[in-house]
Length: 159
Image 1 (cartoon, rainbow, N blue to C red):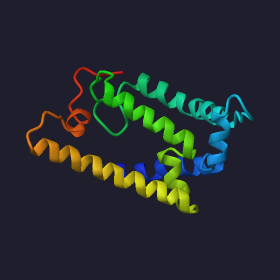
Image 2 (cartoon, one colour):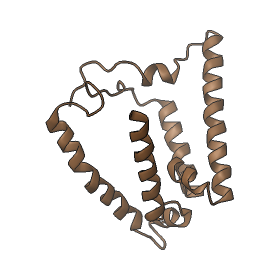
Image 3 (cartoon, rainbow, N blue to C red):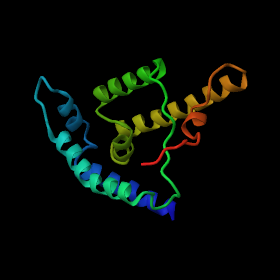
Image 4 (cartoon, helix red, strand yellow):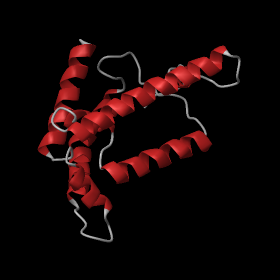
């Protein structure tokens, strides 16, 4: 059941990206060009998404537990470190150069060769990162695997 809900919501998200034209890098680059020919449409898409999502969040908080789990859980808070800052900077620079972030790149890869190359590069980069982390961990280097941090049980996290 969770798989079907994930498939449905992912498809709905992809459809929303296509309908809002957020798979068009020119639209995204126009939004980022605040000192030039600024296109505010991405801000309206974000506001619309927040307005559509907010009632569900407030309803779930009032309900006290999620629909498909026994309790709310979140990954533990991690400090802002150089890896986080570098990753955020790389993401922002890449978004500003290409006009794609991961979701729209995957959706656009079905109709655009450049988006397909970006999506493939993104998948290779994720695989390479996991391989390097696994290699560093198996060699006894002091690097915690991101999966150990992200999937650690949340303690006392209830909304």
